[in-house]
Each structure stands twice: as C-alpha cells, then as structure tokens.
Length: 76
Image 1 (cartoon, rainbow, N blue to C red):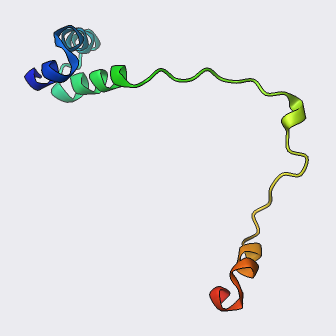
Image 2 (image 1 turned 30 degrees about the vertical axis):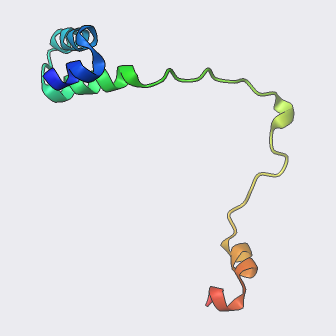
C-alpha cells in the first residue's frame, strides 16, 4: 500500500482503505481495485439518437461475400 501512496496520494489511499473496510473486504487487491476505478475517466453521457438514423436494411452475415472478394484461390 505504501507504493500506492506515491502514485495516488495519501488521501486517495486512505479513502480507498476506508471504503474497503466498510465493505468488509480489506485486502491489497480490493484496495488497489478501488484506486484503479477512481483513476478511470468518467463514463461519457449516453446520446439519444433519432429514429431517422435507424437502419432500413439490417446487415446480414454472409461470409461467402468475403470469399468472392478475396478470390477463388483464397477460398479453397
């Protein structure tokens, strides 16, 4: 945990330890996981899209199309 103080700071490590103790899982792995989650950037907001952007023809999985593009020798 002392090495985490150098990278994350004393306050962050102390808060992570308190959170781990409150959860009843005070181990190095749990504390490092809490610190890593706090370093992650916040998730972007979800964007609502209009119905006009919906696909009119959904894609189909057809691997034979790719074999045609690669040529007859590549498909064999």
